Amino acid sequence: MKELMQSLRDAAIRTISETADMETLEAQRVKYLGKKGELTAILRQMGSLSAEERPVMGQLANRVRAEIETALDERRELLSKKLLERKLETEAVDVTLPAKQQRLGHKHPMYNVLDQIKDIFIGMGFEIVDGPEVELADYNFTRLNIDEAHPSREWTDTFYFTPDSRILLRTQTSPMQVHAMETRPLPIRIIAPGRVYRKDEVDATHSPMFHQIEGMVVDKGVTMADLKATLNLVVEKIYGEGTVTRFRPHHFPFTEPSCELDIRCHKCGGKGCPTCKGEGWIEVLGAGMIHPKVLAGCGIDPDVYSGWAFGMGLERLAMGEYKINDLRLIFENDKRFLEQF
Image (tube, rainbow, N blue to C red; front, side, top):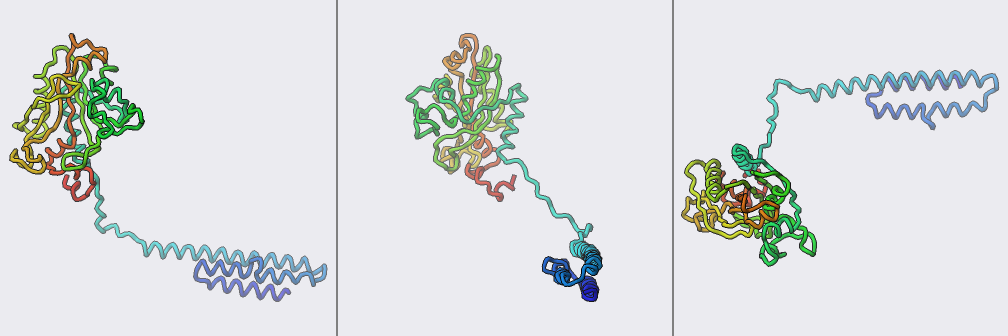
């Protein structure tokens, strides 16, 4: 048995020293030292030895196991080093090569226009406020003097969450008028940008989700002239001096008197095209003097204070700024379009 163990030791160490990869080395470990390995097979024969021979053979077996394990560890370490060296050679980085170009993102054109508008209004002493997109009908309609029979309150026009038409996706940023008058001290000068939702069909100038900017001033002695002057200044700062605007009489329940502001179509210069639907003008916003009922409903005396408000479509401003002829391009995330900006 002694000769068998010695022979096993010599064969194992020789074979291990010639092993070329980790997978084969593991197979050699199992072959010689595993539960069904060759050393275990020899040890099973110890039952035939005398009591005096067994301790001697046991010590020899432990020494042979230790020598084979040492050979395995040394070979494993050597193979690991060779593997690392080979990997470093094959995966070496040539630091003299030009670096890969890192493509950086940039702001969406619509948000570039929003930042411009914020800067303009902040420069005039306005504050930026934010409000909920999920709103109560009381704020979105009732407290803005929009009665129950108004078409905008129909399920065909508005996204409601509840059967009683009490909770909805806001159709305008105008509820921020009420929120601001309830919570802020007078005088008030705010703009409130944000997403709004209406059941509009998608076309070149409409979308069921779009962005509005609500603006409001409440103070003593505020007039319609202040409103027109402010809006003309904003339009000129966005589109350049001499931009042609048009104010048209209109009706909004929460303002009196009311108007709409149009800008001359940037695509056709007023001649008429698909972008402006042949009219030569693009509607940008609705505005007017805040209705006395709205002021009174927020605890503000309409005999002492007056105010004006407007709501402008951010997408339409971006279309004019960047000469975009179809609103859908703003939402489609086509990189060919966005990379132009």
